Amino acid sequence: MAQIELRGVSARYPSGGQVLDGVSLVVDKGEVVSIIGPSGSGKSTLLRVLVGLLPPSAGEVWLDGSRLDYADRKALTAARARLAIVFQQFNLFQNMTALDNVTVTPVKIRREPKASARARGEALLRRVGLGDKLGAYPDELSGGQQQRVALARALALGPEILLLDEVTSALDPEMVNEVLDAIRDLANEGITMLIVSHEMAFVREVSDRVVMMADGAVVETGPPGQIFDAPRTERCREFVSKILRH
Image (cartoon, rainbow, N blue to C red):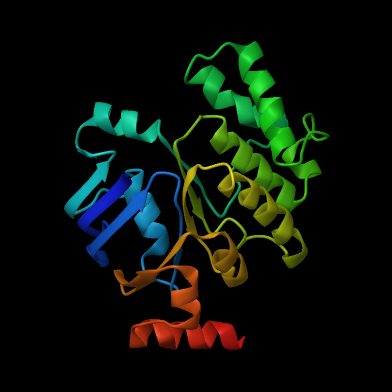
């Protein structure tokens, strides 16, 4: 069943530059879809459009069969309650512990009782391998640990759909695997995921389907074996040949 459907979605920067050009894409419930492509192809922008950080200039976005009206603040708030996005930068509150970073939004914004929020926050931090870092502040954590706190913070909102935007790109190479391991575990639990990543070995392993983008448009979509081993379009073949050579 389609959980996310984009129908001819285009988007422009406030300055007027086109960044998405007629993107159509269907993501089924529980599916892990990775988006790859050269820098500036619109990958990250696609995730930002989904959560309303950059509303589409044309086309439609549907969630579970209902069209999302980005001009309707109430509808957008309801949609955002079902989506969580994790960015390249950790964006943690430096004056809060790992546990407080995970629980602050459920408590302050959603008015969840503090005791239940903390119990769930502790469970989520254990889930991403940080059960021994509950009281640690961000400057006491490695980059990989901070990114895992950011993952736990996103999960604390109980999203149905998790959007991951190059979550390893700001990390030192030795810290990448600990974040990818946490994402692997989440992928195995059936949450719908849209992943923008340049970690091609990881994309091949974790994805049900891979979408290759260039110049703001979808060039090719298919299972990882097709995209990496037998791409059907010249543009995809060109991109894959370059990234697999290095």
